Image (cartoon, rainbow over all chains, first blue to last red; front, side, top):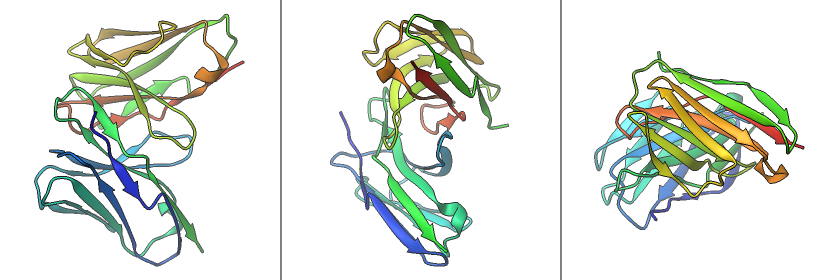
Length: 111
Length: 111
């Protein structure tokens, strides 16, 4: 089946720094979704992308749907302590049967 | 209202017990999902209901039994579980198979 890869696996940053993380696939996705998950909670949808090249913002978060349809990135500007968590990229597979998650990027913000 | 609710929040059960997890959404979504998530891993799809009919069963053991009484409710019946079934169980719903909205999860511990 289709798979998603995320990089980096984890990152430690200083409060106030900008963050960038990537999601890639060997096959085309038609929808890219970015979720954040806090420990013991369900994933929360941050941004949804539907068109190649689409650039969408949600507050300090910006995400882009890659032109090749095989990648996406998420940027967080001016990080704050509550940005700590695991960020997952995800999307429905091209058969519309399965929902694929990347392995996640774990973000830690140092004060 | 983009809320998916799950009960209970926490559940501890023995290997001979029978218990049920419940999920509810009032967004009019046509699809509902059960996921299992182990620590530091992404959610793994277990079941998909579309228009109240089971459409995907990802080779889940029969000790997990899903039920969709109506378009707003989703249950997961548990019987004779094993300690390795301990995990966070997430429910999600979607209108179009694209964006999924997750509940807060049920933390299950099997003794």
